[in-house]
Image (tube, rainbow over all chains, first blue to last red; front, side, top):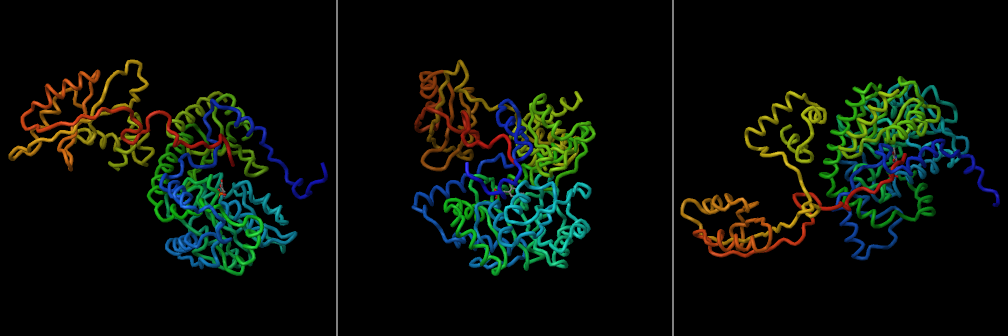
Length: 381
Length: 162
Ligand SMILES: Cc1ncc(COP(=O)(O)O)c(C=O)c1O
């Protein structure tokens, strides 16, 4: 084999690959290791996409995406968050938030630019920063209940700091910012002239307060990312969007145009249907996650875990420290002895071996079964 | 609260009051009291199971949907006939309908002959029954919101992802 890109080679394969392979091969387990809804896409959304395909909508679209969808997104951002983005030039339809993250980093980073990445967090932030030529500066947020604070940002600040990325409600912790906490992050970014990249893919899945968006408080130097995967159970459609100011978008769209061309047309129509007529389904699923959140949180507490009540997304992140095991050992033994799969925190923060991520987007009977297995396993420790 | 309890029990009537309380952020006592009230007031009539009859070994029963046209009675409308019909144990459901017929009667019997006999000897002769049209059920795909057999509309996600 001829030499490969040294940049790609420098990305380490995830240390828990082996554990993941084992989980994949096990079939008599209950998995709380997933990262997506247990619902299938609401039928009217799927049906609308099929209808559009039948009508012959099988072509490329504008690089930005179909204008109807961009208009709908802009209208919703305005209505819900008082955020104003021009559908013609400030909204870009992407292949999931995943593509949006890649675009954001590649659009703003120069070699040696630093991005502040609070961890634990969604696994792709740091590798994507690295691939875009930047340097991820990871900040451990476990001392502050997984909320990035002003002090943490100021402490990590160097002359090379270019951007901050946040993702609240958070995967894997379920932590969710309050309005005050979000404003605090926004204000530091404004004060210190930093880009803020806000991954808001879970922002509709909150259980106590109303959904928040950084776009309510910031426009210049904000790159807003969102999508349909979580709130509308549409992970497989690969559809999301970026909203930012035109000057940034003009540059960003070049990458999207050459690397991706456009998001799949059927997924764009599905997303349009989701925004126009999917609110009831979204709310039904949110209520259902909330009830399951309550069950899981109470039961994990009563089993003896130290655990924060997650306020959003569909993850709960108990500490396993008091059981005298590392998260990786706990997860491995829970899998082989208790037949339940969870993800150890090392997957989301390299040095953090204290927590396990449990996804409660599982059926209630499975969830109860998993909890009683966890309880039995913990009793053997 | 009441509606939420009913919805949870609709999904799984084995859910305990303590679980419901946790799910709804209430207390077990409050939930118990609500359920008692729902039972007393006749909102909750029964806790039953949904069965896929086709998979039962001795499933040889037949079901018929019978459209019944009848002459309404003075002051009573169709209530009197409906009340007579619902007394028969063979009758599973009775609905008053709009449209070209009046009552839809669902009848269950051991075989075709038994259902036919019920229609001709019991149902048709009832005073004010004008005519009947019998449709036998061939296969159930979905009933009361529940898909019979393996639901292909379930998630096919992988066991683990970030
Ligand atoms: C925080 C976060 N951002 C982004 C994504 C990816 O979303 P999409 O399916 O829109 O690419 C995920 C998926 O797990 C996530 O957890």
